[in-house]
Image (cartoon, rainbow, N blue to C red; front, side, top):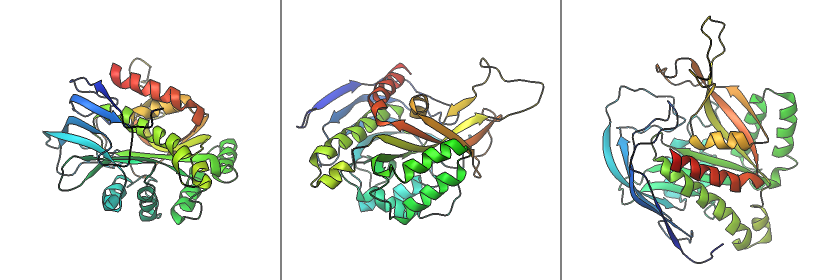
Length: 319
């Protein structure tokens, strides 16, 4: 693994990419995304893209999915940055509904994300005066932050919504006895973020985890990134169970629609997962009329990360 700044260029397609009915967005990425060793300079990465602009961009966890809004296509130069305190409002906004409608310490959780600068990235538009956060990603060690009120409330929430007794026992072990080797991956973004940004964004995360194991100033901090397993909390659309005469078939309707493209890969690679109903439901569209938004929790072994990275690159390049 290179230790000096290097640049690799990846040619990106110019046609719109879509991954699900919910996350469909007309976005065309042109030119190239520069990928470099993530030295602590700003920005980390840069890319040039078009996105659909609306008065109030919605995060992928937003409870609004109206298709009647007027959109304007605008050019945006995206860049990856280290988290910093100025990103608090943007990160907190993207975390709305992360744990459904639960009242929890979302501000404290945002502070944890922004306080960990060696592992984690925020995505902004280069030169944007508003300094808006379009996406962020991080991995938090559950034992390192076990005394944080937000982590304690998150653990309590996950155990509460787990419907399977056997999985709940496994989950409890990961959250308690094995927490020192468990990384909570948190990745939130606006709905129409260009999907071509996903591979370099996840590459940045997993590369930084590897570098932190070597570069953190103390052994305790280094060990806090030696993850054996990752937990992810996300959302999917599941086909509603009906007793009507019309029966869904694989040819007509998918049983699951992934809000985030990468979740399909994580789901396939996970050791176990469980779904649970959500109180906050988006406005119904014709495309999603027969579906219900559900929460999903997945446990993915760290050894599966190389496979995930390869499959994510293939998914984006083939779409």
